[in-house]
Image (cartoon, rainbow, N blue to C red):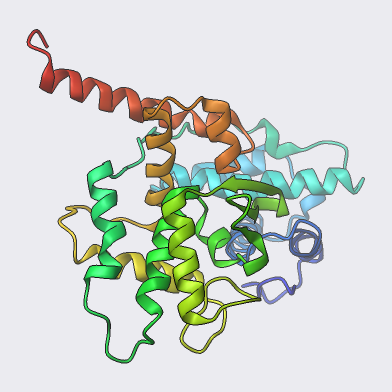
Length: 303
């Protein structure tokens, strides 16, 4: 895979080598490659002519000060330095330098925000939308069945948007009631699939005559894109009473929260989501606590 085009006119050979490594050896997504290439290009612009291998921690503190002065969001700052630190980790692994100066820079802490999740009733309303909404006139007859299967599988297995779009027919095993997923860094995991999602997939495949290749296809019978799936969610949201704007990722949030609400343990949810770190999954415990507090406040006579 070719790294994204760089903004600078002068070749940055070390950064280009790093981006090739991410693309070929780490199988990084196009979105990650674009974000990291952009971050390194902006840092490179701040450093002017100073080589990467000659940089000191103060150089990056100056860049941090520049971002703070520009009132950049904390999440944006941390993304910039995530790219930088991954780059320097790569340089150290390739024995190009012995010390990572970016590691000495103290970054602002992220302001914790609880993920937005749908209630079970709201999920039911969204999941039923494809089969109760009038089909678009130019769409094939099987398309509402595909949309229903997409939404059901999202909620049933908590997949990422890119993971769902990349599924092949062979990845969905109806006998073991599971899907094989290749997540971030091409890490493989197996996710269980509930009966409603399995039945929705079977109905769609039978109607669309999908027997091999990509699991979810467009009307040209090619693999559906991640953007098209995002548009599917947005289209059916208009036919619900859900008052908030949601993305496919919020279906993943809802999946995790409803599992914990139902008594699933945190380690199991971590494995199902494909999180490398348990701390990433722990944010959902805060969501469930907030929901419990709300239920208590509304129902308990002494609340």
